[in-house]
Image (cartoon, rainbow, N blue to C red; front, side, top):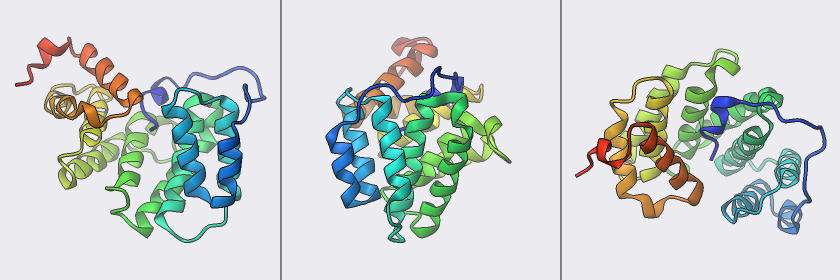
Length: 212
């Protein structure tokens, strides 16, 4: 999910999304926001996602009927985040949309998917606070710490917390979380494992990390 790509917020050229829309994205429209989110995530996990896939998913998830669930709200936030990863500075309004729906998901069910919306919101605040109205990177870090406290055995939670520490220029506390994430590496998706590797390299490599 949305992460280090937000640090740069590099603007992309061109207006029309590149590539074609995969049929799985189109077919998911009939099943609602969560199905659209899952279809997009499957394309990303397979390494086959196009910019057009992301744009179509966002358009579809915006049009999906709101069933009042945390899943719907989270899907809205997560798909917006995936588009923001690609669009950079052109996506500032989308970042606000992402925040709105992450907060809504938390309001509807704070425990949904292991506090996934809180993790998403914390990551957003840490990495893009300067691009949000009233954004607070320290609040983002606190949110990520709360998620780790609630679910300490989830490698992804530790990965996002470590990413937050490093992004805010305080790498020392990140070492412990990176060790936990490394131990749970087999539970991470390919893009998350790649982020883990890049963070470890940034801190001097596995030897510098000193995991037992």
